Image (cartoon, rainbow, N blue to C red):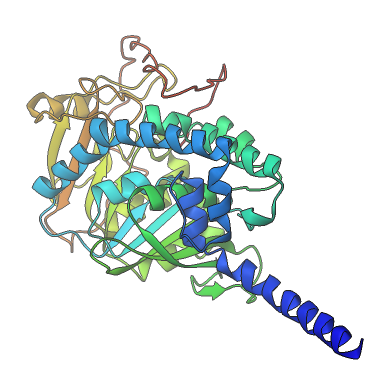
Length: 404
């Protein structure tokens, strides 16, 4: 009996020791692949969940959706970038991005540090292997819904993200970043919560970053070339008052100069309330790729920049009246064609893309509050874009908001 008791005790101890090890075996990379509808490592606790019919349906849905997106847009963007970006900087800035790593990587795939920022919180992804099946299925469904608009259009819908990514089990931008990293062929090495203090210094984990820090996530990953890269996502207010109160732009300045992407940015930098971030990008970017929702042409110093327009400028969609730029229209009369859609005007024959390349880095930034461009005339009522044929079974809420 004593021997049996000892054996039972030893077995219980081994089980207790095995439980934490099992939890540790669910890596961030396995979680990302599982959420993306891709098989995790064979020895991962998540591997057993891939036999569930709900996950298999989820995997087929994403296989189809990302295959279409790759053929329709992403592969063409990579080809365009290879042909037009001669010497990209190591750092890539993407303000008002949300969790859109997919297009950051497509345009600037050679960057080694990516800095994404928006209001949405970084959120949390638990150990999915310890959740009830119903909770896992709900998480997969929420991720699908949250990605519906960017898979079909190229931008997120704010209202849809706020509903779907504040579920009980997963939340914030982290699950979407996971999906985009996995579907872009990346391997996640490390995921760490970070925060910025008022001086722009990075604090890791539970370190004290002072009052009102900009909170975010740092993800170390690699691609096919096995080069280690870093992705930062920060939840921060990019308005003038917001950036004055945080160390976000001070942190970005330590990584400058960089290349910048501005897409589907709700025309926020057309107003004086976002002049600080606008000036930062103009002062700290070697190249800027944007659609017309980014920085108005009037704020670029023509002595410091060369402009390369691509596509067609059809004016803003009706959700953003009064944002027509006559100077932009004149510039795009000599635009080169593009074979992909981007931004709010997501149709290929309506999309505009402006590549601005700095020619004189020592030129001072013009006063962003003193535009030389007169008030633009009200444009003719633009044609409202029609959603494309939905990928899989999409649910499109009425009265949705456009994502920045």
